[in-house]
Image (cartoon, rainbow, N blue to C red; front, side, top):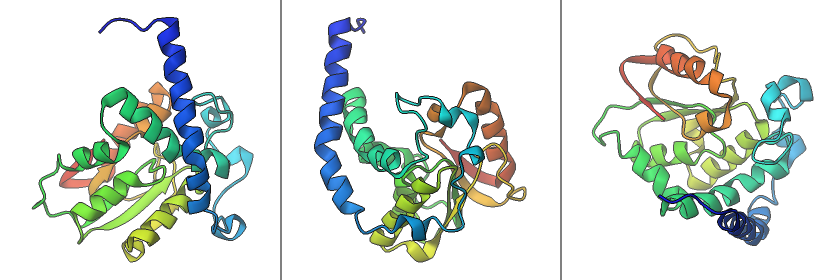
Length: 212
């Protein structure tokens, strides 16, 4: 594949920003009913709670995922970036991912780490209607949006939402039939990857599945 020229890169960035900007009014309308002060009760929102890397610019956004605005823009950004990069939609990417696990697999308990807005967990919830879910992220704003989506899909009774550091979840050994993440390892520092994968292995039941 030929290298992109500076002009190509600028055109790509311009198109991504155009798509995000066009999508945001609908996103804001979708989540306008959220009472953030109420929904954030019980979660950590203080600056010191978050891992240091979150306070550095992530994708050009300082303090990403520690404000409602940054988290609300997530879906719009993924819907803009992924089709331009991979010729599939974000939703199609999630569905292809969950199809890696045979539909007749006995999956009762699922944990998603770094769930973001939980599209990965929702795809799994549709594929395995008997399963219950722990949806986790370090950002409470992402968890509020995730819960909104689960409620809208009618899956709210099948899920709990917990603020968790993927490096050290606190769950007992052998807790889940399936432990999954989708874009977590893209968002975290490279030195975290072995720690997160080791933790995923620790909390997955023998014979269970890890999907990322």
